[in-house]
Length: 145
Image (cartoon, rainbow, N blue to C red):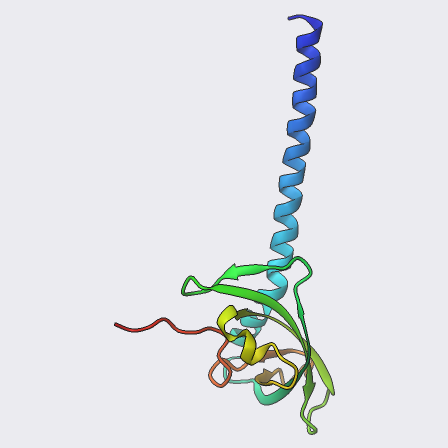
């Protein structure tokens, strides 16, 4: 093999190695970002019926740092949001930050300052809240028929 072929194969190997490292880093960042916004649903399942009902009023809304979207349970597009919520007067904490995924069709109802979100709060740790999906749905169900 000629020297120029070895140089070309070396350049190719470096480029492919760089592409592999880039792909792995994108996968790691995406997975980490996704976990931040799916944690709320897992907290809701863990709280089950032990969560204390509460209400929060949306003060500020932000999209996720990397503009994360995700497919919903019915194939719709879910948008990752951070909601700053002002808790009710009887709450132990005045404000909480809630990271969750919201169906894009419900954004005008949920992702606006002043909107009321029904929550379940962990009795052991008042900073841990999740959306009470029975009273504040985050997904639009599919049509029947």
